[in-house]
Image (cartoon, rainbow over all chains, first blue to last red):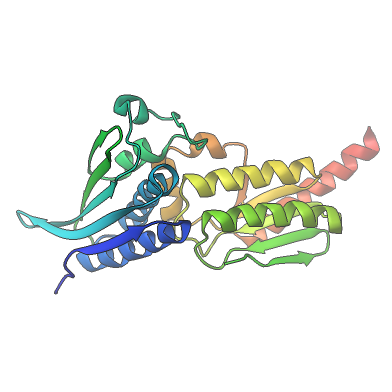
Amino acid sequence: MAVAAETRVPIASEADIVAARQQVRALAAQVGFSPTDLVLIATAISEVARNIVQYARRGEITLSPIEQSNRRGILIIARDEGPGIPDLELAMQDGYSTGGGLGLGLPGARRLMDEFAITSEVGKGTTVTMKKWARPHG
Amino acid sequence: MAVPILRQGSYLIASVQSELTDADWVQLGDGLAEQVGRHRSRGVIVDVTALEVMDSFAARALSTIASMTRLRGAETVIVGIQPEVAFAMVQLGLAPTLVHIVTALDLDDGFALLDRRTREDAEGGRGG
């Protein structure tokens, strides 16, 4: 089965958060994720997309199907050139938010995905890299 | 997309038909708080069966809706959270946020729950 190449989703408004969820679902379904995993992935992308809109105003999320030793998965990279995060350790704690939210976005997204990395530089921007691997299902 | 709010007796029913933006959630909360007053509703059902994702913003919106309508004298029941969505919400860490929210499996159970609760309220009122 042919799988689409990299998909770029520009994020600049609340409507783009919904669009990102729908696009990642479509791609993840092609990769072969279970219905439960589709929801986990869509929820994770919703959180990182909202962070972009809320803190950086605009950015971009790229979605790519990936393969590694007979397993297939999805790579999600969310980039912005916003204000950056001064204290990443703090930002990854449950309940910490500077934006009036629940403070579950980043730590929650990490729990929903298999691999999660974040880099940020104050004044330059933030990049979140997440992967999820499909489990064989019947 | 705006969520239609229907009235059935002393209850309001908001049936979410498609994925909502953050602004749609806020609008739904405002609409319910206003209509509870206008129709003197005793109960509100928010049906989220059609939703494939409930993230932290949606959870906070539901929590706000439940609190707001309670302050306006109505009980809110959330119905139709799909099993995959429930799993994702727990993984995300939303359980503590939603602990005070009343839920039911589907619309029928939601109505039954509201009937029971509003009847208890009425009986409690007479007794006290």
